Image (cartoon, rainbow, N blue to C red):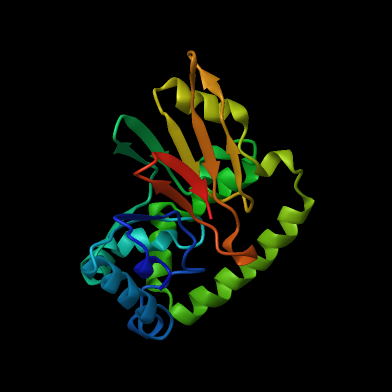
Length: 216
């Protein structure tokens, strides 16, 4: 509703917008339909929407054609490059950048494998929800025991991207917002992490008139 009141041309959602996605008529109608309808309304008002899945709602990509057709979304399960005038933007959920969180990266490869996707499609939605809630509880306990460094994005990963000609890196996942301005090859680049929206409405905007980014 807030976006509808603003002159927005492009909206990028960086994942985990849905706490969990279960592809069944029951769950779509009960849990997601009202939100999908809002996406459709935004699209009809002239907003192009790109959805990059997160670690909680990645199952959307298995059925993205249906979602894209219904809600007018472009859905991706990998980071995307986006041209904004002379700038090249790297836009992602951000979990692929947390390279020091080895246990999570192993878990991610396993849970998002074709075999696991097939298994999830075969079991009932309510069972999937119960399993996901259990995994979420275990994950929270594990997160409390992890070091702060392991769940952050190492600066080396940022430098790798910037060295490839990326001007602006935009990601989420880390549950806090920050801005970095590293200098690579004599030019200043930008890194933006969008915070945990449960702690307040957080989004990154680009002011096309003044050509600046900012968090709100």
